Length: 542
Ligand SMILES: *[C@@H]1O[C@H](CO)[C@@H](O)[C@H](O)[C@H]1NC(C)=O
Ligand SMILES: *[C@@H]1O[C@H](CO)[C@@H](O)[C@H](O)[C@H]1NC(C)=O
Ligand SMILES: *[C@@H]1O[C@H](CO)[C@@H](O)[C@H](O)[C@H]1NC(C)=O
Ligand SMILES: *[C@@H]1O[C@H](CO)[C@@H](O)[C@H](O)[C@H]1NC(C)=O
Ligand SMILES: *[C@@H]1O[C@H](CO)[C@@H](O)[C@H](O)[C@H]1NC(C)=O
Ligand SMILES: *[C@@H]1O[C@H](CO)[C@@H](O)[C@H](O)[C@H]1NC(C)=O
Ligand SMILES: *[C@@H]1O[C@H](CO)[C@@H](O)[C@H](O)[C@H]1NC(C)=O
Ligand SMILES: *[C@@H]1O[C@H](CO)[C@@H](O)[C@H](O)[C@H]1NC(C)=O
Ligand SMILES: *[C@@H]1O[C@H](CO)[C@@H](O)[C@H](O)[C@H]1NC(C)=O
Ligand SMILES: *[C@@H]1O[C@H](CO)[C@@H](O)[C@H](O)[C@H]1NC(C)=O
Ligand SMILES: *[C@@H]1O[C@H](CO)[C@@H](O)[C@H](O)[C@H]1NC(C)=O
Image (cartoon, rainbow, N blue to C red; front, side, top):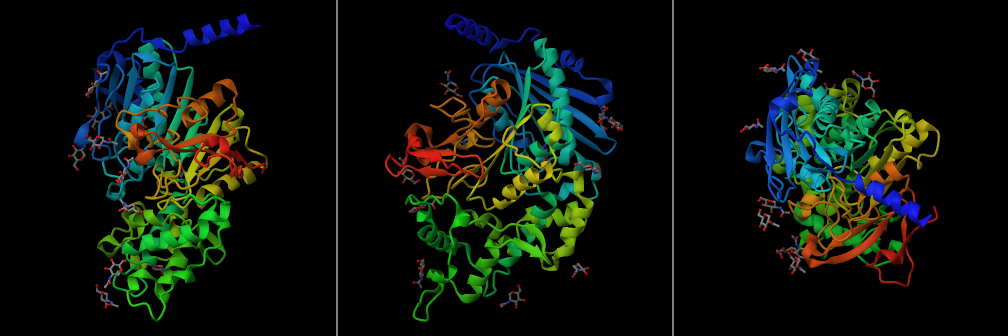
């Protein structure tokens, strides 16, 4: 028995890393792998030495930073003409020492550029890794490319990710002389949406998907962003809360909500179980300095920010969670006296109202977005049986301190899937809420919540050469390894231990670790051990 498993170990191990056979990092050779009907051209193929760097630098205005410390690899750039009025490009890293798998990575917001940093994080494990520019060239907060451009929107919505995946697999097969034995996806925000949309539209593309903080409900999320920004405008009104006062609110939220979970640690484990009383912030007549409290109209604004947006019983979008305040400046600072472009640009350019001003906003724009579904981007096909039945596995995450995409929208999505499939989903789909994590990564100043699980977009926060969870390179701590383990070995991720490195710096050492539990389970403290150690916490029985 022992001997057999030793043999099995040897067998698996010997297949763990495949050395490139064909290994021809030459554009003309790689071009042969691409069928003519795809209108695809290999623009370049460059050999990168061990510990090298690669990317497009500043001409990739969405992702101008190149990853460093790369393994030896072949970096390929491909253009695909997807229609007579649209084209997209994708980058592909083919490592010399390959783990036999393919990984696609995602984008953020409206970013039109190849996400080289996430590719760098993926190639560190030995994956062949792809990222696409999704068919346009822009920063994350610029949506002007979408005006009267339905084909470009289709590329952004789903087509570029699918095409880039299909063609990358062909290039992988050609380069190594064998196909990838498993295929994965990892993306956050828009990347989370792209992953869910792929599961829905192209269930065969990936065996395992990590969808972080997904911007899945495009038609509602983007329009709600206008509504939300408008709550705190104009900046000269009496109901305006200046960003300088957000930290005052954050402190009061921590004061009232932190210990609801029985542990005083600045981390709110479950914001909905805190019944926050905003009136405690109300200015008293005796208060002279009105920036240390909120006036009645400001308290009303605060209530709207936390409340769900509903119209005549129609649920549009959940409000922001208590504990998200320190990230509010991104959407609520009223820069230029307007809401964030992620909302306004969507109405202007995706819905084709170029002269739109936020003051004109009303519910009819939500209805219009639902009707038009620009780029068919919204991941609203809740029945994902095709993916489930082919053995696909989906891990979804969302931080509770996210102020860009309300955490509640992922809970809503999860419940919709359970409802649509009329069954339990935990044999193929698990959802991990991350207390104290902001949008995709990071934790509010002073909170120090364990958030790092090598989820999409996370590694580059630590450094431009990080991959995985330094010090903890295993499926218990690393969500990408967890999905691989689930797909290939059937090991169910019952929990994932998140890590906080002091000041988000690996060299400072680990400050805290704590398990994340699959929804609706929660991490519960054992009331005895060191609160900063994962072993002092267990996932709740229900
Ligand atoms: C893609 O479009 C460009 C610009 O229109 C054109 O020059 C190129 O030949 C096209 N490539 C293919 C493979 O269709
Ligand atoms: C890798 O390259 C960096 C510079 O980019 C250099 O500082 C470092 O010493 C190199 N590491 C090794 C192991 O060669
Ligand atoms: C994207 O557009 C900018 C101008 O806004 C340009 O400088 C850059 O070269 C373009 N990038 C690519 C990859 O075409
Ligand atoms: C190739 O280009 C043609 C003409 O522009 C277009 O109709 C077709 O959809 C493209 N094929 C793919 C796979 O993108
Ligand atoms: C706010 O500023 C606008 C012009 O930007 C002005 O029309 C309006 O009267 C001001 N409102 C208040 C309350 O000062
Ligand atoms: C009011 O309080 C704020 C925040 O504590 C402080 O920065 C500001 O200087 C105070 N203003 C006055 C007039 O005391
Ligand atoms: C919403 O606003 C648009 C543009 O300002 C206007 O044409 C429309 O009548 C409004 N709809 C409702 C229901 O108020
Ligand atoms: C959008 O995608 C859905 C599947 O999620 C499909 O049923 C629908 O036909 C698509 N709509 C368009 C306009 O392509
Ligand atoms: C973080 O909080 C500390 C005190 O809680 C404060 O001194 C510091 O300025 C804050 N840092 C940032 C970047 O806000
Ligand atoms: C990544 O590289 C850029 C440019 O060299 C640098 O500004 C940035 O600080 C680096 N990021 C991290 C997390 O070290
Ligand atoms: C963490 O960062 C803060 C502010 O940037 C600094 O004051 C503190 O010394 C840092 N701690 C460590 C352990 O590096």
